[in-house]
Length: 340
Image 1 (cartoon, rainbow, N blue to C red):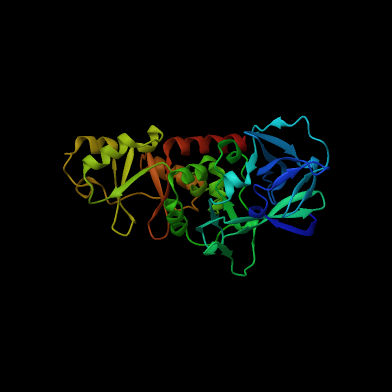
Image 2: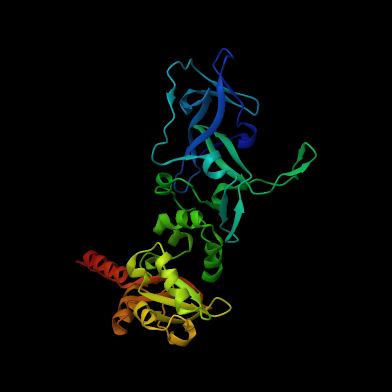
């Protein structure tokens, strides 16, 4: 992409007047529509303009001028269509601005306080994110001088299901250990976790795992409770869980530092006394996988030990995911199909 010099912060443009070529006001800018592109900056495809009580769509092809002061259309727009989001469209204000992102260099959550739009030779694109909080002094806003960071340094958590399907992870993968990544994901809100794992392959790329490894095979659906919790607590967690049935056949117990302590089957939990602690009934000799283990290692180990599920753990024994027998079987079938 060839980048020109004009750049604008999104916050300066929202709610600005949108005018026709004669300067007549049509409405106000409500949002900016982009489409995410792998290994490239998101491209602005259109605008959402508030006209009275209706939001209408304006194609970027009809945009004549975009400045901090005005949004000018290049032609008369008497046939504006009511805006309906299409698959793959991301709304910068609704989906990104003010929302949390993953800082790929630190594997930590940050918030998008502003978004930089840059004029390119073929239109406009999102090139940067401001993750520094605005500071207020009375009614005047002050912002310390600092560079806007490159869009590719972050992974947005797009809050729209259809858009999440086409979300592509930045090419910059994080280097920290799996436990740090797992802690970051655990810190996410329930909605953010849903967005992360809505496109499962994307998350595995984010974590740096190849599809043909345990890290690429694992899912995030599992129940892990402190070893001091009771059997009744564990069964209550199973009842409340919104997960696949096969992901709940084995329950895991944790040490005080969050590392894996033990495992017990759902049947064992049902047969135990409700007041017993999980430490009393869990087996602390747990067969585990490393995120880098191959599919062959995973399927062989699960077959050898007759496992219905196997946790994938980091070097410090924190659970980063779980592989079910259904996951392993599906991967083995796919692998045989590719070889035949």
